[in-house]
Amino acid sequence: MVEALPPMNPTTTGHVTKDMSQPLMNPATNHQPSAPSQDWRSRLYTPKLLLWMLSIINVLNYCDRYLITGVLDDLQSGSTDGANVPAGGCNITSNGTTRHFDRCLTSSQQGLIASIFMIGFLVGSPIFAILVKWCSSAKLLFCSLLLWCGAVLLTGSTSNYYVLLCARGLSGIGEAAFGCIAPPFINKIAPPDRKGVWLAIYFCGVPIGSALGIGSGGFASAAGAWRVPFFVEACAMVPLALLCYWSPIGRRSEKRAARIAATTAVHESTMDKLLNHLTVFRNSRYMLMVFGYAAFTWCIGGLVLWSIKFIQNVGIQSNKTSASFTMGGITAVAGLLGTVLGGTVLDKFSAGKDPRWDCLCWW
Image (cartoon, rainbow, N blue to C red):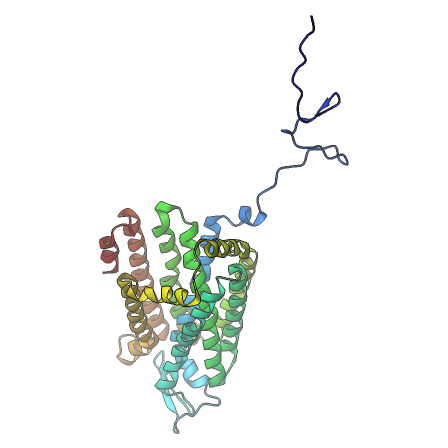
């Protein structure tokens, strides 16, 4: 009786059977190749680390934005080179002491120092919003933050009024890229049930940074070292910019894949794409938020810029350091309470699903 032979394996050669389910051996090392490892950047830059890194950058951005408030008197008398200033000079009172300066900026010229920052931010935002679709977000952050550092150093070192305006405008452009990239990225990496809290942590940088800027500016001004805070914040931003360069934020390969998928899914002409972008103006909730935030920025910008001078001129507090820390403390406490409360309410009541809760938080 002939015994039946076992079925041949398709991968059998002669009497040797190759098990293709096992990884091949490397003849040079006689070891099995290791499985592909996760990208080191993804292992190092955890979501929580990225959240705190971006939040600290936000603190420094707003510290610089409102540092001008605390040193406005010094800019009025110390950045007049090249400016067309009125004859006769001015008297500046600080900490109960009145000093006369031969050359002083007018109120309009001082206000333009803050306004030119927002103009730079306005110009830079749509440019970076387009670039972020094609370029690595990490590299854009790195370049924009280095630009910001250079602008801040120039702000603290120049005595020329027009150079100062250019520096503040460049600072606004540098901050614009960060504003376009950071909030959407945090919303992307945050846990679904914690998005509001994560964004609240990030936006806590607004009141904290504003308070630091106002307080440190007033303290440094009273101490006669008003240029020092600009150098300190620029040096603090450099390592954070380097961390952004190596981070996995908005990789170009992922964006390329998303563009290819969008192109193959829908074929649109250039005019169709333009019309689709214009439909945003018909989104009432979006437009309400845009105009509301614009009104908020307009009010807060003017109040904060002139707050220290107002507090001293009306006699509420004659000491500039005390006035700066008072204004900074009020800004920090009110901003933190509102930011944390808003994020908590949004998470608790499932914001985005029921528009009524969104409107409640806006009010």
